[in-house]
Length: 429
Ligand code: NAP
Image (cartoon, rainbow, N blue to C red; front, side, top):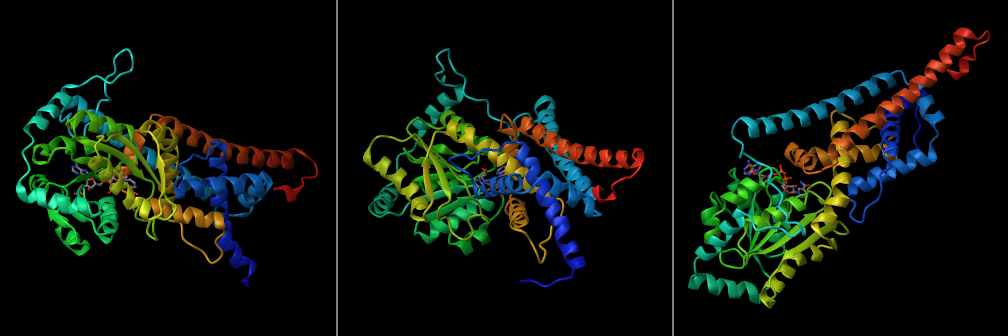
């Protein structure tokens, strides 16, 4: 129960309600569908669409538009925020293609997908034969490493080397350390202080990291830099059969990259924990974890190692979903991109919590909070590796424009009647 003057209510509620209904209506026009692996953010958007489309009439929306003096400004600001985001994306794209055409074409280059023969079978690329050379050059394990391996096998502890110790790498490391795994890390930037606080051994170069002969190498680099980072790793320092795991938010791309670049006897597990430092800050219980055992050797120790790694997430209560990388991308690429786009557009509006937030508005605020912590690189990766991203941006654009047209058409109709009819009905305005 909250007593407040009508004027106060208007101040607090009108803007937030109008924004919420606008977003709900724009998304409603996209006909979003639930997937087997919805993120929390996407679930929230689906809920918002359902509330706005089933409960609220266009009349109600129009009334809010008419009775809120800043409604036009809000529409304009939403449009500007969306334009600014698109310009940012297209600016990156332009620079990226420019680099490829006129110089530095290898920097953060997008990997060419595996070529396929007429039967659709992946052809072994030159990089695969390079991988085989690495395999032959693999150094014999030293005695000390063998002892420590036996120790690790006998316990459920894993020795995990995280490559890319940014936002997400650190977030995963916390839980791994808490579970008793031995966690090592290496990144482009110096994270030695953070690592020390987390109980992680930090290495300033990959050679030293791999000298420690980890059982699992966990790739946590940005989608855009993964190819460059992977190619720069001194794989010959690793022992044979190392398990490579990635956590990239897209899956077909790293799958092809790992298959192309890793020696044939290395295991590959592609995963996507479908939560982040914000949505997973209160634990991972019930949050989806998607994985694809792309290549895991048949002997018991390799199967066990892979299962031990998966158990890190299962033990925390994640909803474990085994699914091919292709299927993941089919379900997730669109929903992730739309969710991040809406979060980023709203983030540019500087929305604030009010004394009378509706559930819908709370959803928008929490979406902004969840996406605000993610890097632009992450968002740009989702854009670049989603075949339908351009189409989705266009559809969002069209849905927003069409909603505005609907409002203005009605406004125009009312004013037209007032001008040309003898007794205008002012209550309709
Ligand atoms: P991100 O911006 O996608 O990646 C940051 C990481 O990439 C840092 O470790 C950074 O190293 C490294 N990196 C970026 N550019 C590099 C370059 N040119 N050379 C070498 N390293 C480079 O942010 P993130 O949130 O930490 O995500 C990491 C991965 O996890 C991504 O692939 C993302 O798709 C995936 N993921 C993220 C989430 C999430 O909620 N954040 C959820 C699921 C999966 P430095 O910090 O040392 O510069």
